[in-house]
Length: 120
Image (cartoon, rainbow, N blue to C red):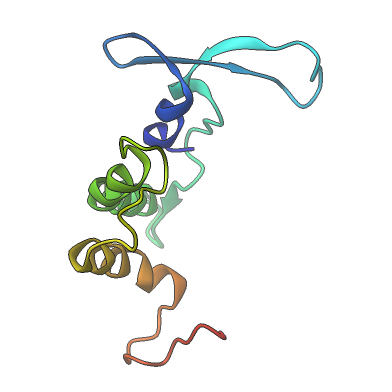
């Protein structure tokens, strides 16, 4: 789970320290504090190995870059003074283009424009 999303629900405890109250699925009645960086963290989930046996982190690096590039748009939506999903809606053309550029290929990887429609 990207920390940039979790921080919005956390208590700021210090530089780069954001604490939430969490629960495990086993022992659901026993909440406990945890830092955002330790929640839903699975190290190496997207790590891979090339055909030559060389380890790589290409997918994690791709997701990290996508999240970084889309962060200004998510900030505009989630950090508006009036709360999440601001009154200024829809997003600006630039914001919509940024999201489309970053996430469009993940939703519909076809190369030809118009191949992907809302219907699938």
